[in-house]
Amino acid sequence: MAPTPQTDRSGWPAILCWLTVLLEGYDLVAFSVTIPIVLKSGYLGFTAAGATAIATVALIGVAIGAAGMGPFADRFGRRGVLLTSVLLFSVFTLIVPLAPDVVTFSVFRFLAGLGLGACMPTALTVMSEHLPAKRRATASTITMTGYHTGAVLTSLLAAALGQWQVLYYAGGIAGLVLAAVMWFRLPESSAYLSVRDSVRQKGGERQGMRAVLAPRFRRISLATWAGSFMGLLLVYGLNTWLPQLMRTAGYAMSTSITLLLVLNIGAVIGLLLAGYLADRRGIKPTALTWFGIAAVLLALLSVRMENSFVLNLVVLLTGIFVFSAQVLIFAYVAQSFPAESRGTALGLNSAIGRLGAIVGPFVTGALVTAGIAYPFGFWFFAVVAVLGLGAIFLVPSRARTDHYPEEHANPAPSP
Image 1 (cartoon, one colour):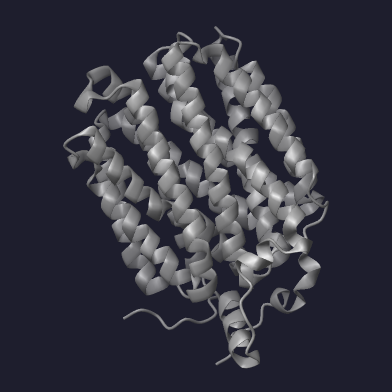
Image 2 (image 1 turned 180 degrees about the horizontal axis):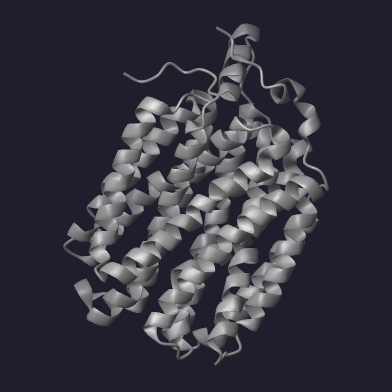
């Protein structure tokens, strides 16, 4: 029997949110590792253009899932949306290797993407409501270490197993196990329950989408949407195509996959550091610093490096600054919106960011197909990081946490 929703003081929401986000990092790198293998073997008739199309279709599913499920999380609760999303992703990931042709493979990836799209913003919403508002940057960055831990895990499994199909079987089974644990251990968010009870008692109306686009939030929404577009373009472009970019540059296949591992190790380090600094120095100045340094490092990767230590160091630093820059935007959004519209705000931010996630692999794939991915791919990424910096420059210096003192007091939900 499912637990009765109540205020949860245990560590289960944090653990389950972290594992949920881990699935997305696992899934993305599983496909990244799959690309060069199926292209080399000609599996199901895969081509570079076909792989780009499948990556795009999957991300369209992710964008639809993120935008569509956010309002449901605000209206009906975080728990049910998160559980449903994990189940949808897990089932269709499990059956991806059974696809008889490229079209069916693409459909399975799209349907898995629908579930996956709702996972991250809903998990970030739950995690941000589980900790005090003053620690929301840390909440977001700690949760997102799961994404890169999943990416590292996939890289290690790919190197050890050499069978891309096993990656999908393992990911699907892990997701089903996680959903089962969620059913028994994940309570409803106390912040959501407080808002729900307040609406019922006062006969009010939920704001949802209208709050996200209201005049007092419009500047925040538009600027963070642009920042997320640029940030997720970098995250998905690099994680999807880095092995192939490095192969194009003349590095060995083993080196290319190792660099993907190093990139995501750097991401975990960067997330922990960025969250710590953002909660003490402010989210905006930290995000500006991160985007600026990321632009420099991405441009530097366009130079071929013969020294393996220097190459790995630059890729590690790139991971530290590129990936956590995007997550700081999620932290800013979580801290800027009240509980009644936080799920919608994060879902829309994630969905619009996914458009960047579609553009990144698509543009990089087009450069690979044209045979000019190196060095132009890294130059393109450097310009995108500069544009992300410009978007964050436009947001207010402080997230508007002063509007909702009743939530910050973390009241228990009404009986």
